[in-house]
Image 1 (cartoon, rainbow, N blue to C red):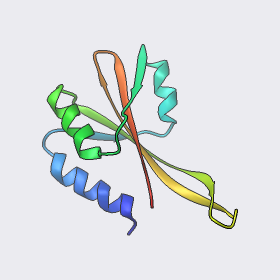
Image 2 (image 1 turned 90 degrees about the vertical axis):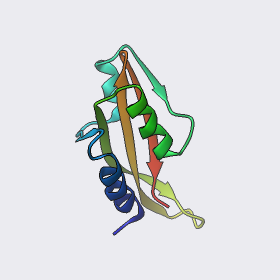
Image 3 (image 1 turned 45 degrees about the vertical axis):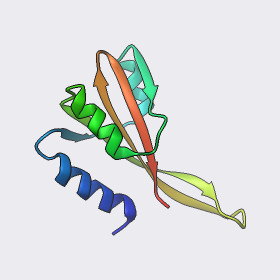
Image 4 (image 1 turned 90 degrees about the horizontal axis):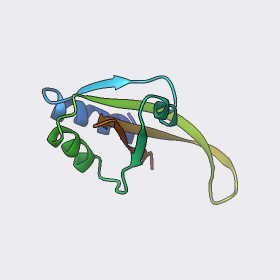
Length: 101
């Protein structure tokens, strides 16, 4: 099981009774069609991000998994998994992205 899958399991276990997780099938950027503004989280600490969601009273965290092409040291293309998390508070979509190592 990959690093992001382990993180997902630990997140769901830790926040099971505080947040609902909803896996979405479209890009997080497309969520901007539903909200007035979007603010990216300028930190890679997903625990702080989710704690903030709880603190401001968010009920749902959106989870979207995808892959993108990246190049390694030899300029060989490879697929890298990423996870976007988001929650809406006062009409603003707060987002963060995690990448697999």
